[in-house]
Image 1 (cartoon, rainbow, N blue to C red):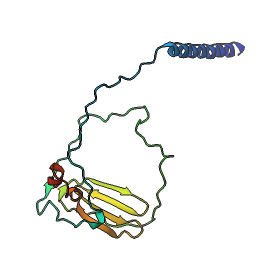
Image 2: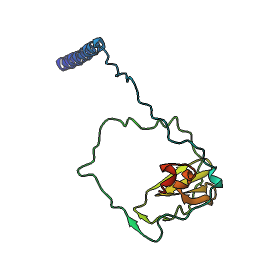
Image 3: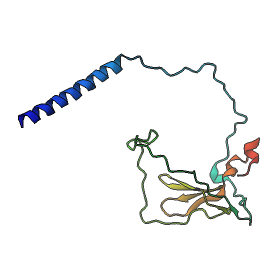
Image 4: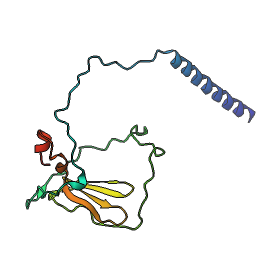
Length: 171
């Protein structure tokens, strides 16, 4: 029994010594600095403008019309890549400010204005409003009542006063 305890202690001490030796050797290696970029290329903007406030924008007709467009769903071949390492872009939950909720409130979101399938839906929740986007449209809702505050309108409406490609592209 004493012999087993002595062997366990010897193994633990050996592991500790090996770890310390590795740390000392790593500390003596020179640190590799990042390459410093020289002569960066600066690309100036083509156009700069300030849009009118969203609440003052007039709604536009949806772009899809009566045609129904189906975008094929393409999946990557093979198994998903899963890493054991923590996600480097995960947000720190301590830095995020809490947002008030209205429990048990359901309301319909943006309807299928452009008739594209499958829909690409996104939402952003603030203290007083919910903004939802579906494909090329967005709508703003009152968070407490679920009533529409603005929209639905085309996302491209934000760029309607901009010259160049941004103002011409309607999706």
